[in-house]
Length: 361
Length: 127
Image (cartoon, rainbow over all chains, first blue to last red):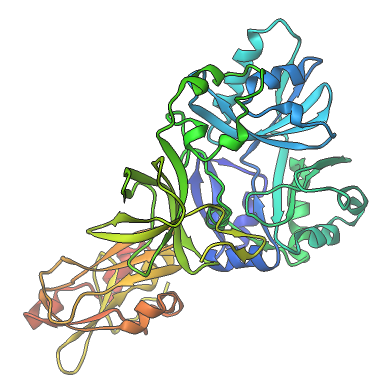
């Protein structure tokens, strides 16, 4: 039995095609996923991301605990509401999940994790907490829903739908959140566009969704979410990184601080590892198919593999994230095995698109 | 779902129209385009290629997935619609107008064995 978000009925009423995503019944599109993609790049779209889990961590030792539990350094969070992207690592450096940590108060942080990994993450964090003497409470918040509103007009349309929230959310800088009554409004997202991710009580979700619909925000499914995040050069857990890979070979070295004296789970293993692979972007040259995950990449430095590939609606060309040997550089041409053919692709540095603008050509 | 009564079908979701000269015009069904979603790449067989019944002869790719298109009967490819190669989304807009390729069947009798609209409607579970 698939789990359903509080917006399930709204998706069905809007004609969504529903699919199994990590055990959740989620909308993949409401018609054309390419049109949904363009709506986010050019205007405003919304995604039900209630399958993701917010977990609240409270206690005097909350920051000290996260300093050890997360690969990125929570000491970067100096301002209340500030968000930090981080990996959760195993001791061997493998990636358990990627997450966003929000600094609420000195004794309270909120972590938002992926749906399919949520139970594993909570069990992992509880085991880490149990190994410490400190008093920490970890509270999964399945009583909360999440709606991401993204696009150049997203914030304006949120203020139309939720006018009373404007004073609190208008001053927010990117990657900062604010608590507003029952709402938690973050200027974050997974599309490469401006916008908000709004966390709110389950009972309020359908009402906000309807108000956003009335403000002409287009409902968008997981299909558009995937093409948008891939254009934005953002990893998808389970595809671009898994427990078998470390962040240094997954394009996430910028989220891991090995230089500081701070110890964290996975640090010793990462410090000892020799890096053989790197993540790059690929832009297909000419036509001939669509780049997809698991296709083999042939380079002058050895073989690699595509971890995520799709057709980019903004570039009208196929793009991919790939893991290839160190030494392959932007500007190189590599070959990708697509069915019985070898297609040329150019190595580029992600992202491919940001704020509606193509960054590669 | 649109399943025109004047066409023949396969259980792999191709439609087939017999032209007055006996050649077959072949495309993918409305059900197929709907299931695939936005099409972004189409590869068609070379004119003159001889194909067996059930042979994979064309490829349609959507944002989500790649899918083979099969020859409904044995024959020789006599035409390919380059218009859909340049604009795959036309198949999404109208799957029965925007054909993929033409086939001269080795045996006209084979065509009679293909599914009619009623049988295909059952295949896609809408009977």
